[in-house]
Every structure is written in C-alpha cells, then in structure tokens.
Image (cartoon, rainbow, N blue to C red):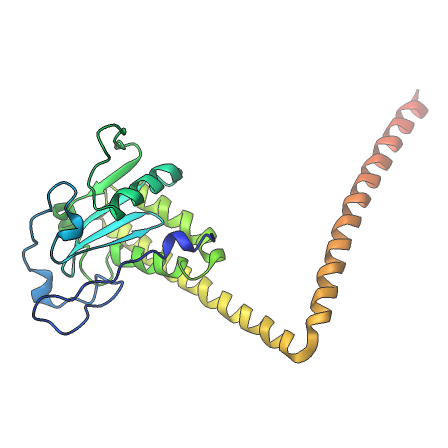
Length: 246
C-alpha cells in the first residue's frame, strides 16, 4: 500500500433530510452563514456512530475528522510518530466506537488529542481558509501522490501536533495556509514532471531513458570505487610522508 493510501480513506457527506443537493464532498468550508450557525446534534451514545443521523467521518493520515451535517464536530490528532496509535484510532472510528473495548488500553493524551466542537468553534474551524480547511486541502493532495504524501504528510502531522493547543492563533492559521500552498505547488510540479516524462517516452525515447538510468547506476557504482581508491591513495601518501620525514 502506498503512502498516499493512508490519506485517501474519506467518507463523503450524506444527503441532509429534505435536501436534494449533495453537500460539498470532502470539504467543511463551502458553508452558508446559516449552516455555520446551526445547532449541532448531541453526540452519539457509546458505539452509536453508524446510526447517528447526519453523522459522517473522514479517516486520514493525521487522525480523523467527524462531522454532524456540514459542520466539523470533532477532530482527532494523533502523535506524528505513533503509527500504531493512528491504526488503532482508525479501527475505532470505522467500527463506530468512541473508546476501545474494556480489555484494551485507552490511548492517552501523549498519543492523541481530541479537539471537541467547542474548541473547533473558538478556532473558527468551519470558516473558509481556517486551519482545518487548509489541513484537509493538504490531506486530499497527499492522497493523490505517494511522493507528495512522503514529503508533505509528515510536515502536516507535525504542525497539527505542535499547534494542537493554539489552533485559534492567526500565526498558526497562516502556517497551515502556507503549507497548503506549498503542498499544492509540489503536486502541480509533480504532475507537470510526469507529463513531461510521458511525452518524452511517447516520442520514442524509452530506450534512451532506460540507457540513461543504467549509465547513472554504473556511474554511481564506479564513483564508490573511485572514492575508495582515492581514500586509500591519500592514506598511503600520508604514511609515506611521515616515514620520509623521520
């Protein structure tokens, strides 16, 4: 499974009662003023997520996002270096549980942080351009390209974790937006690069490309031998100089 796969498991929003429009898939940002001020349905009972009307979730490379209707209800941020905690949290979310079974140890605050609706509201998470909107932009781009996921994914995880207590800061919000732009620029350049390679190969240069890759590997092997030879030569010369000086 590629690095992009862990960012790509996203559940689309369900249709709202009496509304024929499909809510903006994969985004919590395209909301009307009225939608942003709707009252949020109370949280489900233990294990009741899958039957909670209007509830949807996204599991992603940094944790998960839970929604009630179009609004962010809960965000869970997993420690950036704790892959086992991420896998365990994803299993719980997909099974519709809030806590692990009694015989399993609960993940502590040192391994994950749960951002509830009250803090999400204080940090303006539902507004366009918020830290959460930018984080989801990055997560979606990471879900399209393994290389982007390997480069930008760890940066997003780290930023979310170190900023978890200061998500209402304008400086933090600006950092998320800047990271989102950089990630999208990287993804755009990667697409252009792959297109250029495809055009070059389609023009009949496949054998040249393979030959260049082979020659590059040869040069790398030879360079290693040359470095060893030069090191040995330098050592012998230094020993000879010492002997001559005596």
